[in-house]
Length: 79
Image (spheres, rainbow, N blue to C red):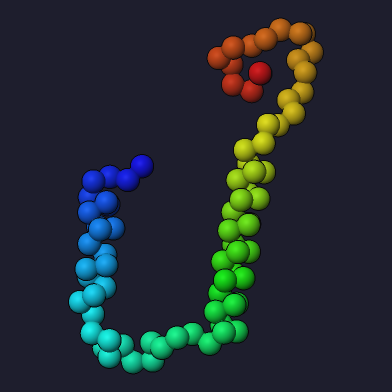
């Protein structure tokens, strides 16, 4: 959820970007196509890795059955 301060920051971001002079950054031209393709591919790989880790950590784990058949409530490690 966005906080009101974050929404204000997002609304003022284009205004701040418009204040930067076009020639103030040396060497900030468009990226070469192979570099851009590599950055997009790396971003996709990292995003996929994050999704896989989240799914692995969030999946339900198989719990061993209790030997005595009882259900233990509020006892860590027993059920």
